[in-house]
Image (cartoon, rainbow, N blue to C red):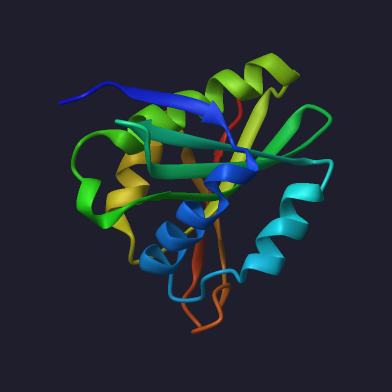
Length: 147
């Protein structure tokens, strides 16, 4: 397998990120919503490249010493290749660089694959957000409080 390169997002990657977003989530973002998100001073996004193709992306909002994972997704054709592990390592490196000490997220209660990924990175279950997702599914709140 070719090496995975993690880079900060730039305009050249937006269309590929939006494609991954639409293939990965029930309620994907529009291009205008995503472009506005990138203008948010608290938002930080990275992409995973394999052979110069965007195969995944992740984003956080960082405020002071806490951050929230907004999104993490891998193109369906590249799942099972540990790209999500590279993305999580990229997020953790980004957090350390900007002084984040605690990291949180919500994940669908049905998404055990993602939950297991987060547990590998020392995330712990700390609560439930009832009907968090637009389709009514609950969101599991997870934290890593010791980056």
